[in-house]
Length: 120
Image (cartoon, rainbow, N blue to C red):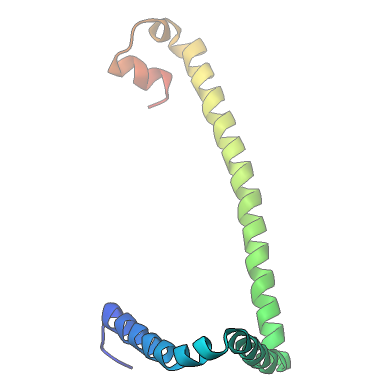
């Protein structure tokens, strides 16, 4: 492990990428279509090797499934919570104004009235 900070590590990685770019630029200039084809074949072979391991496929499937399930759960809980929250505060506002602070809610604004009408 290195004690280098995030910025210095990022700088080192960017220097490495720039160096690799300098090395591959002449090949790209000579044959751009062939370079792209070779890159696609190379990355495809690398992906095939990664996905040829049964455990890796299972792990990736479980991870993607868990993220999708989490997103659905958050969406469902969020929509229900917002609906309940809006209904709660709407009912509370009208209940407080109608039954307890009716005259105060009809008067011009003041801190005490606002606190009473909005449940503060």
